[in-house]
Image (cartoon, rainbow, N blue to C red):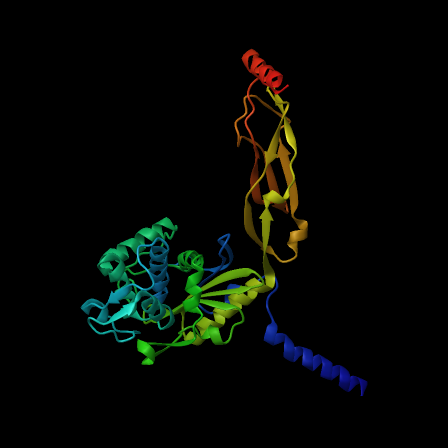
Length: 381
């Protein structure tokens, strides 16, 4: 009986382990079937995993991440609004591929067009948005490429705003992660990218999200899928757990199933092995520093600012804090003068630093300044 129980326990463990097996602190390229992939933490832009991250590839409707980013930025800047009416052109209607069958002259709000673009990956809606904002798709694509340069996307050239296969329309997994993380700053986008099922045209047109991870992955928040003959199956998958967000980019998967599997493996790896620590410099109480030849002998100090840093789980206890401070400062002293540095380090590697600054001005000692101070004191009596 004892032997049977032991065998039973061992078998149960063996059955459980494959379901949740994640390589702790290691993920090999072989575990990702797709040819190109990146896992990035958005706030720090730190890469947690990479496989051919800069290999230039077609990316299909992942292109719409940039389209949506430019639209969301325009809304935030007040250039356009969610209730603005978008009128469909002949060019927008002609797109083909995944669409919502817009007719020439048909009107929808910006809100509805964003929903169609983000949820149904509608090529016609993406072009209609582009034309509404910039007049023509070509002008909008020029803005896409300009924004890509601003974000440091060195391996990206956009030829259209929806991702239909076109010669020279290329990007890479790293660049897709950069623009995805930028779009994630606009939290309103998640109102669209987390929709599974919805309707347009007053309920007449049903749309279903192309991101199947919405139904299977805990914490998924988006972001965009894409599939064409040149690109294969692609995804930029975003998720959040315990206050940490991640972005997993997969390009060139053979099938949609492999695309979703690879994205889930990447996200699982990130959540299992990393955490985000928040560094807030204002929590440090600083006193004063000596002022030489000043009207005051000391000046108060401050250290402000905050940042997030992604580290391996459990390493937070090893982080060391160091304050490097000058012994004194010569007058005159301007407010905001740097006199030291607050540094956080992990295994001797700096992970965050903040300037220590003076909080006030200190005038240099002089006969006239001393006389003025004495006169003020006499008046006060």
